[in-house]
Length: 112
Length: 115
Image 1 (cartoon, each protein chain N blue to C red):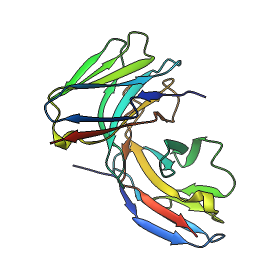
Image 2 (image 1 turned 180 degrees about the vertical axis):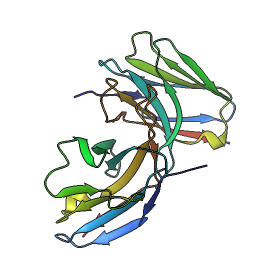
Image 3 (image 1 turned 60 degrees about the horizontal axis):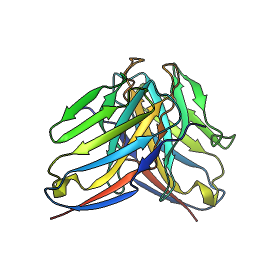
Image 4 (image 1 turned 90 degrees about the vertical axis):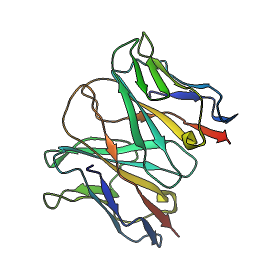
């Protein structure tokens, strides 16, 4: 069973601060997605990373895939209250595999 | 922008009753999925569906569950005899093709409550 552990589980910071959340596994993933989920809604795809060491930026969000493709991080610069939400990483262990394995989630709260 | 839609948004049922959850995937997508999320827990894979047949299913997807694509647009999940532990959010997802990015797009979910 592949496990994706996210840390921290909860994070509450002031508006304008920077933060990083982590997604770690002992398994190698062929691709990894980051989603954001609002209460009572479905996960919304933010980004997909595929290559070890890959870095992708989405405005103030920077996503990195580890060199060994076992871990990933999400860095937010100058956090805004609109960044509040549940951030999920989800991975595929091989190209032919159908199912996404989801992480445990990081619940982020940005305090105005 | 195209999106996955699901109906109903909420479903309350009595234990032992059958429920059908409906999804309309993005129109040009070929791969379809059901996931569920029990309150406070991780999103869990249930089943994947391609070319009118199940391609993969999890241990959760036992004989009480079935999926169907009855026409060109709908994708349904049926639970034959609901149990209390089936209470969860059920998410449908779809994917265009087997690209390396394999991006799955999720619907808003159906909240199923079994009493």
